[in-house]
Image 1 (cartoon, rainbow, N blue to C red):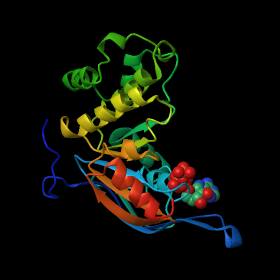
Image 2 (cartoon, helix red, strand yellow):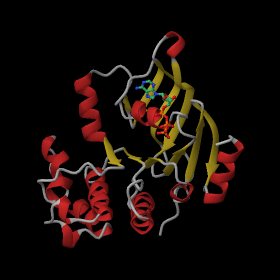
Image 3 (spheres, protein in one colour):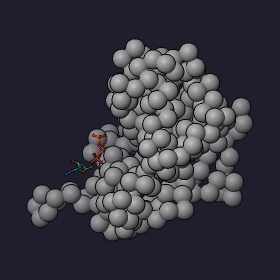
Image 4 (cartoon, helix red, strand yellow):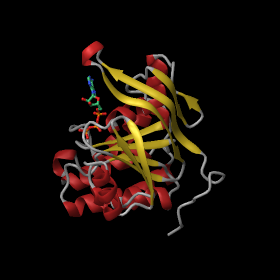
Length: 251
Ligand SMILES: Nc1ncnc2c1ncn2[C@@H]1O[C@H](COP(=O)(O)OP(=O)(O)OP(=O)(O)O)[C@@H](O)[C@H]1O
């Protein structure tokens, strides 16, 4: 397995937020979900975003992915400025440059695994790169399951289909939101192992929000949020270093 690339020369920024503020509500009810947050996510890196409940993890991911707007600051995906885009442009940006893996898989039940994987490309009129499709499907061990519908697959297999769907368009970045939250530990480990391999062996970029210190230990880098601010960065996090960093926040 190739070692993760460390230098910023080899690893340009895949996504970043600069001095982002996001406030929900007004007056006495206002919640400052992101409080002048700046962080960049390097390409060909697996980054875990962690922090106590309510610390701003989902808000950060939603702002990065253009699913929510920021009050001030800038957001960039690859070479694309996200801030200020119209809804139509945001939809195109998400479709063409971002992959998503959700806790609840979000596969279409009436489509086979293969059609689920290809759907995004079909909708955007892009051709499937057959060699890349085969590489992703084989890496995920999905070849024998391509003709099955989600209801005929285990949770772990469904999440692997969701990973293939996220990667098949070679996005600038894959955002994974608690991807192992609905899986048993063995299936979770398989999905995490694949996400790591997609970075180290296939050159992809993954940003994962997780509560789970074991899941975070698969990442190259950990970003810890607390009260809407960046509290710490962890290099090569282990379950122990994540737990003690969270404990030092009183989480
Ligand atoms: N739509 C919203 N309206 C009002 N407040 C919100 C909204 N979304 C998030 N918040 C608040 O913003 C803060 C950050 O929420 P966020 O969901 O980003 O945290 P989180 O770290 O992802 O939490 P969890 O781990 O529990 O999912 C919280 O105080 C939350 O209550």
